[in-house]
Image 1 (cartoon, rainbow, N blue to C red):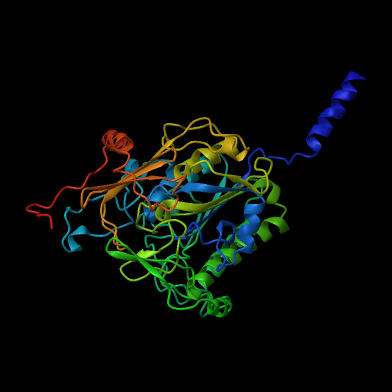
Image 2: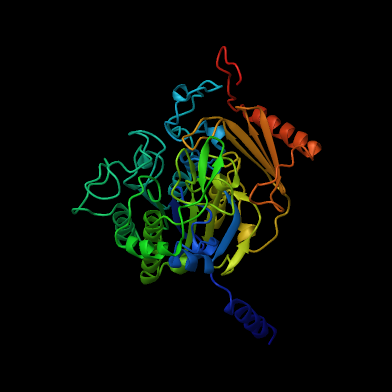
Length: 476
């Protein structure tokens, strides 16, 4: 009787619980230059992203998900390795802005690596060594030929090479050395989606898999997705007057989402996500597949002219260490782990994906590898963070967004940014001021000094490359 009752209780307790696969599959969507506010589920009213919004509704949405850098290659390296960009010596987009070409610059050019070192261990290599089939499609931007995805743990590479912007643009005939167009005026994102679905249909069914789709969208060139642009051109008629802009350093920030061409490129990503999620359903893979959605840096908002999107209520965008440059849309759906429709406000960072995927895959942590990342599984399960973490950004380079060398730190609600070019520092309380409009460095000198000291100590410990002044430089 006691045994029968125990069995009944076990059945009842498990009846409503989703099943977490022992060795789940992974689908990782990485979008290029997608802003924190570019999705419907993050507040956009001009862009429409029903498929991504549905994904968020089925999983957990992070409101404080950070990229390790405000530009692409360093963040991509951090995802692959679980290590901070400073640690892998990729601190700028590859090959980066040559400081020697910047007029009136204060600092010399800083050399960092132009590839992800072969001796680094990637999440793809680790999963592959543990029985996973690994597939990569899209933008790599972590090294030249000989150091492409197939040399870094992926069985298959469709379209990943050294360039960050799609050579030849988004419509065939493009000039991608590892992706030949099949038809005239073929759209790149549609093709990458088709290749990804083909992998799902033809994969080795005896193995779990990692499907890593790194979109070239929504990076420049801003070329309209013709199937969606008419809708947004019509929708843009609601706006009155020219697009508002606001000065940011030597640049200008776009202050409204109203670009039909850019909106159509966001829609192309949403269509792609929907098609792949539908394929997972059709192939009965959904319940055994973890889906991750992220962007490599903030939306391109601030430039010498005007960027294609706005990250409001966050400040600035790609290339800048304000929140608009480093805070990203981040969604994880892990069947049997995440509660549908949940939201997590705990700050997390791109190095966390590596240990999180290991944990979800039932594999042991490798803290000597992913030394700068922490598993997010407790947060995925709805548990509260056990302690506050400190986050660091080091971007000692010049960038086309008009950013000049600097670094930043976030601890709790406090964030400090150092601007080396003019020996300036800014302090913000993100809880009270997420838009970073009220600099508190003068009114709170104690917190300013504390965070500056912690940032400097971290840079020293990490042996971060610091800007060196040009010989004979004179201020102003």
